[in-house]
Amino acid sequence: MIIITGGAGFIGSAMLWELNRQGEENVFVVDDLGLTTPPKWRNLSGLRYRDFIHKDDLPDLLDRNALKDVTAIIHMGANSSTTETDADHLLTNNYEYSKKIGKHCMKHGVRLIYASSAATYGDGANGYSDSTESIDALRPLNMYGYSKQLFDRWALQNGLFNTAAGLKFFNVYGPNEYHKGDMSSVVFKAFNQIKATGTVKLFKSHREGYQDGGQERDFIFVRDCTRIMAWLLENPSAAGLFNAGTGIPRTFRDLAEATFHALNKRPDISYIPMPETLRDKYQYHTSAETLKLRNAGYSTPFTSLEDGVEIYVQQFLMKQNPYCDTLSTPNSKGQ
Image 1: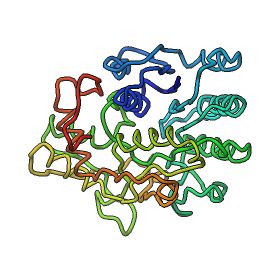
Image 2: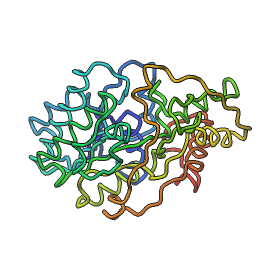
Image 3: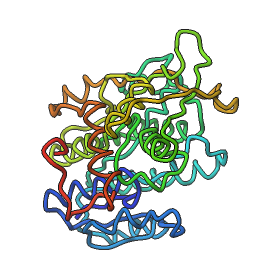
Image 4: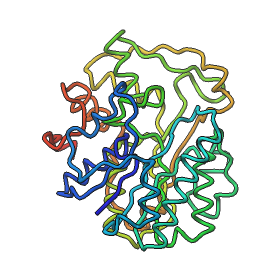
């Protein structure tokens, strides 16, 4: 039996789809569906799982060891908003909740795979090494990133990395992110801008050395993330903290142009000032170091930005049902 926290969310539901495609349905989904608008519940409607548990009920079930047959917990649940201003909420929801899961997994020998974040790297001044020796040198730019760094520190201090794997997700895009609002990927936003206006607006650069739209991110297709997690489930000896990125930074302009190309349209891009509230918290460059994951044995190639955007746009966003669904199977490029 597998538990996926945040199982109705973006990466969590994509991981459930990954497991379903492998024939695995003995999964408990843990989440908070909230309101019906946006329809987060739709992420689950085409997927198979054993039961749904509200996130507030899970800690008590774990304390009572009521879920005795659990072999792994994939902990994706968190408030992932980089603009969240309620620090106490992030400490409770992201840090303390994760500690409860971590303690249970260590006590009962349960495999844990959890979501950290590239937001822990801050402005990148101290590099993008996923070595645990570098944790204390990192300076996140927002409270979300700090909440993730706190748990990474706790995991290291308490020996959790002897058996668990943490993943520092970089800029993930792909199906089932539709409920995320401002936190959705630029691919999803660009697709909707193009459909509505025929153009895409990107932020101007406010840092010397970067052209408008030339800010760089390590964009990773969500299917690559779920493949990594599936591999980690099959290889429990691979433990520690790992980057989940391609190692190849690309510009927002590249991403916008790839979206136009997937729609068979000529690029039409304009640039707008970045809000002042973001300027001192904005990452101009991210790039995952991937050697640690490769050395652990993960050898599957990553999807290129152009192929990933094409799959996402043509096989999901342009379909009547854009969600991950057990009844739909992407073509060979989407495999």
